[in-house]
Amino acid sequence: MKTLTLTRPDDWHLHVRNGEMLKTVIPHTVRQFARAIIMPNLKPPVTTVIQALAYRDEILRAIPDHLLFNPLMTLYLTAQTPASEIKKVAESEHVHAFKLYPAGATTNSDAGVGNVKTIYPLLEAMQNHDIPLLIHGEVTDERVDIFDRERVFIEDSLIDITRQFPNLRLVVEHVTTQEAVQFVLSSGPNIAATITPQHLLFNRNAILAGGIRPHYYCLPVIKREHHRLALVAAATSANPKFFLGTDSAPHHTSLKENACGCAGCYSAHAALELYAEAFEQADALDKLEGFASFYGPDFYRLPRNNGTVTLERATWKVPERYGENDLSITPLKANEELRWKIQ
Ligand code: DOR
Ligand code: ZN
Image 1 (cartoon, rainbow, N blue to C red):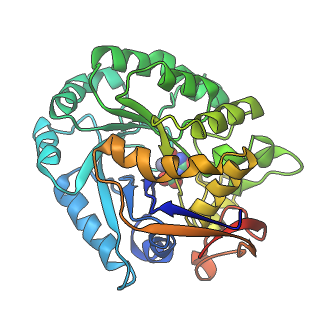
Image 2 (image 1 turned 60 degrees about the horizontal axis):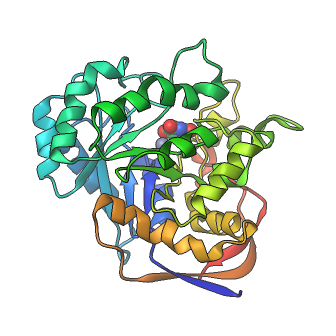
Image 3 (image 1 turned 45 degrees about the vertical axis):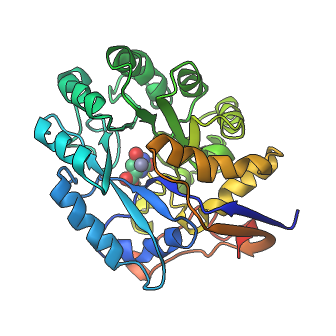
């Protein structure tokens, strides 16, 4: 196959930051995706509809003139979120979901939720208003091994949330384990998951074998090979519960190549190309369009996009960096070759 034309896709989990970083990264996303669910973990976090609309305007101002892109905003859920804010989200055209970060689980999650049970009244309100809840599914208990934190979160919190709120629409973001795939498969149609390119393409050897590679470090951390295989099987199964969410999370190179490097892989520069590699390896390129362009909008109850994007079979080398000097970002697969290219 020399070219592959897909209905224009969307990214259902994306970090674009703000300020100068936003200007560097947003053109990469706009080049391939029509819409993206924008994560709210700025400093300070985006907790109100008013803040989300101001952030949305900043994103729109950073987009090159001729390109169309719709940022789909989310609010950062905290123990202090008032019920009135949930009603405002329900009435908003531009805010589509709440994001739940367990406090301390990842980058800028300090304002997240300590004990999930304390916010059950908010989850009930979301269920009543039919607003999706997007979950970073990891426990933060230091006694739990970092490679087990997703599985333990499912056992300790997710199962109970889905029992208490059986009609709550919920996305288990960036699933990384066989257990998470199994949980989603065994739940109702209101439970879905996003899958990142790095978790489809790599296992934990990429981070640790033959040297420590900080650009492969993200949270939840990349797991063992059998987990990767479970994710590939889910993504290529044409099951509408699994759809594209890159979790592209830019950090300056100096903060990644650091004694205490930040979590996050930058993949927006080649997101669709990276997914195409993963689907091709699984001999499932015919399943890419559903995963990238159909199941996400169906879950969020938004129309599928009209346009198309075409990938061609052409080798190109990913640059070493994007952006200037101290503000540069090292992309996933920097200096390596990719086999697909967007026309
Ligand atoms: O690796 C990650 N980076 N995981 C997250 O959940 C957050 C993200 C970020 O914002 O950098
Ligand atoms: Zn994320």
